[in-house]
Length: 551
Image (cartoon, rainbow, N blue to C red; front, top):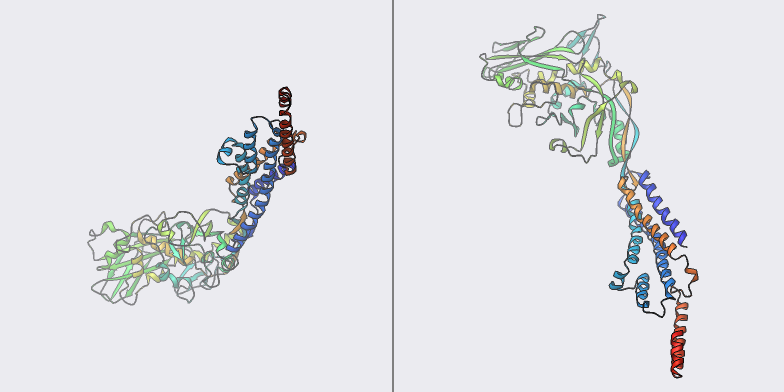
């Protein structure tokens, strides 16, 4: 029996090692409270049965060690010591007896911990599994908002003589969301969270990524994410896809140009002479503003000209060059911005994290979901090179049409733009910016707005392959420390082997103290011996001495 129990104990240690090494998956998702309780209860019952078998064998071997010495010390002064060991082996000893026979209670303690080792090492824990996933994003190719053909609003001449036009004012085109999207820009620590869109904190590394990656609320995009959430619920940890993102600011602004007013209108001309506009406005207290975008050269290139008069010049200076406030001698101010979206997009592995225990900043930590680029990726693997097309470049370049045109039938004041370029206390913003190459608040806000508008581009779509990480319930912790639990059954096996070796001659003993019948037999023999000695005592002294020596 001892050898069989040793094999069982070693098998338990092997099972713990195997579970620690592979962490078998129990279910996809997290156990419910009932499932977790039922699993732990069943594991504890099985572990208790196995431990009882090991403990029984351990107790039996210690009793057999007493048997080996019982016959030899039956009639000498070591019997009380042996009695203490026997009582300890049976588990009925007092503290003094236990203290004098430490190896026995120590071995029992080790075997009793086998239950703990099994339950702890097999306990269910949360793990993760990576599964394949897909997403449909706009391919950036010509669509009804941006297509080949002349448009009275914005258009570029193509090398073949045709035009590429942008219908910025058409219903459903992404330009019409610019003002509301500008309100999503983070003006506190833009280098941590560029903007918060649909409840998702978007890191600067993922600006311009399609809204399909993190929301299903825009024109049918993001249906794949919706299905994942329906299937896995809170068990969905993250998704990752290779998509285009805006890694550089396509807009660069500087003071320069000419702004003029005759109190009934305001005009502005860029410092490169490529962009100008005149707008009839209701000048209030001599203050008015005007903003315009003019396409030029290749698709995605253009110039923005912004003019201001009166007190509105200070608002414009706060955004582009606050250090020059008070040094401008003129009551008018013009700003010129170069726009070039041709080389600002690159593909990145963008991850949407829905669950994370990582420590993040206070601003980013206010949002349950985060979108960020986690590395470079090869766009050709998924065939996503076409996702950076002329429509994406053109829409990004013209994205600020709405905010530049705000209040154009009143005094032209671009409220939303100036709110985004200042802090909550109406003080001009300073870096760090969302874009590493931004130099002032004006160009940073215009660039981030372009990224936000581009995230909602509507065109034909392509399907990308990626992956999703979901929560699983696994057996064991999945950590290296789980291997330590195997030490307890291994130590128990070593103790069993030691005791088996020490009691290998147990078959040669006359009495087994584990047998009640043999204990009665010993008692009867002792009683008969005492009677015999008593009878002999009534005879000659020599006989008594002789029989006492024999006893």
